[in-house]
Image 1: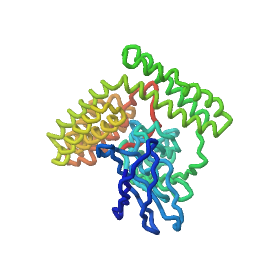
Image 2: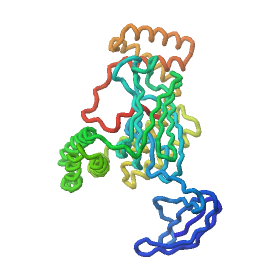
Image 3: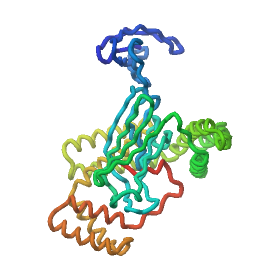
Image 4: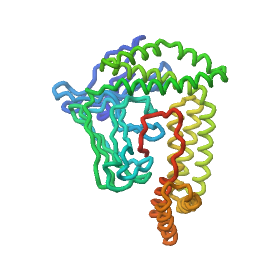
Length: 410
């Protein structure tokens, strides 16, 4: 192994590791600043190996010690995607801002209608496999106009040296901020939240057990998970969590571990269908990029195809899910930039007028949309189509909802 100062490029020279991985090294660090040392690890043949972490910070003791972030942190998005904004090991204070969109519409003044922005901490690519810290709600009862699906939201996370996290969502169409401060050290999940979360996961796992009966290769994995002592430990902690905050925190941690074991069994069953779905999306993306994409977008399609096939070869389910989200984002980026798409969608909405929940409002929007088509105002037409989408009856929800019910997406 060799350690390299990222700024000065000073190198430690080759360091041999003991069989248990222990080593001793003398480092050259710059005084008065935070030094980052990259870790270069090689096997006996000289081949470079990946490490986690791949670098570490060091500050000479004469400087006031910097508070470091213990866990990565970010936002849970629609489709259970995790947008990481803070990385584990970064020094405090921290601040990051990202531009998102609302995943659905809310009507001004409607009690109980919310768009949630869940804040989570952890390192798993699937949002609900990280710890939920808090939700920042945009409450329909507190806004002064309707918010259609696709409304821009600028979300900022800011953490000070005392580990107080401030979450702010600025909605340009309202010219209004929604914010919340969270003291991380005092967070404990409620017993009811944990019980509901456990029940949802058990329903999912019971279905996995049924499906595994049809696939010989998955049966042994499912039996191994079902007999794991971790399952009984979570059940015990669920009872203790009702009167003990520390037990609740431990239960949350152990429940996340159990979910990951459930995921392994579910992924073993879902893998063939997952691969087929990703390849279908790649085909659709290839087709639309050849018709309407820029040269840069077509190059990106080639990269995504190569990356997806590499992940398929390595059989990494989580990585493939994340790559599919990238593929879909690029597909819709190209598609939604085409004026013809919005004209086609408007014509479909005209044909579905009778199914809309507010006939009078639908008529007004359709009249406006026809006018915008005549004036070739595609931006305004897009807004009309999104409002018409909001008037259609909601699709039937899944029997067992997953994730943290986020209302925002990229």
